[in-house]
Length: 284
Image (cartoon, rainbow, N blue to C red; front, top):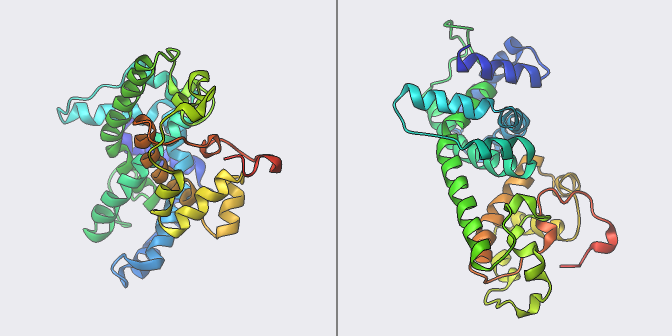
């Protein structure tokens, strides 16, 4: 089965509307967005909706191994060297946190190529007649995200290796960061949390947070206070995808600071923290 067919079937199984209806609606949406050159608030809303629809599809394909398999086949067909370690495949099937890290990154990268290829250059054609016919914008976008998997996976795998080396450096238990409770496995080990004041902190958490956009600051502060993603999205009038994106971008800056032992990261910033008891608020 061709990769495009697998993508289309994954999208069709997730989205409620019939494909023909989605394509018709997408064509009208593209005409509207073209009037503002695919820029501005209207296009930002469109991106958020696209991410919200695509995230569960990509997470499901990553859990089943479909996404990695399609990416590997595409690279093989074009003579691009690429390999996914079997241990990583197993981890991505079992760890929702690991899947979220990769999926959010491929989505952010995929938005750029999708905009250029599908919209600006007109690569998406609602009247396409080849193969299974035209695809909806979500299918096209998911396909672009799969193209980004090789770069994202390579970076993610290198980060895991660096994390393991960090564990060895500080004589921490030899285990994956995803096997330790909390988002930052290194800082959640007993060795580090037994005497947190003994760790040298040259950077303040608030200093880094204050440098972020206002919406990111609000998302992070509410997360630390114990609010769930759903509560944050409702309170700030954001999509769930936008909440996850802002948390992910801020986490990247904190990962670097944590590895350099410049900052302590509150446990509440774990993406799977879920709804906290209100007595936990302010613990950070």
